[in-house]
Amino acid sequence: MNESLQITLNFKSYPMLDLVVKYGKKFINVLCLILLLLGIFSGIQFENILIASLLIIISIAVFIVGQVLTELVILVTDMLLPK
Image 1 (cartoon, rainbow, N blue to C red):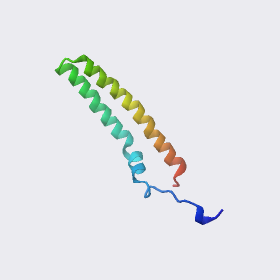
Image 2: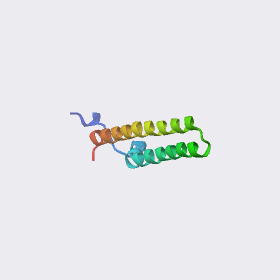
Image 3: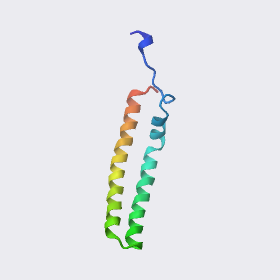
Image 4: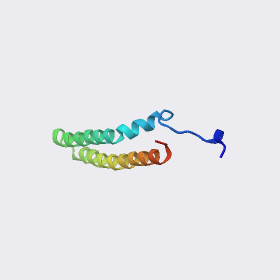
């Protein structure tokens, strides 16, 4: 195979992938915790059950989607980027 056609992929070319791999799960966990606490606080302080339940449901949805996307990025970087 012609060496000039090979593309070298590394984290220096993709800094956002490096950030997602390192801090993605922690960021999603903190974001979901904040949304969950806002939902609980809204339910207790303002007695608004609708907003509280929506924030709790959004927190769960963001957690699931965020974890899946973070794991997908980790999987792709493990498979495609050389060590």
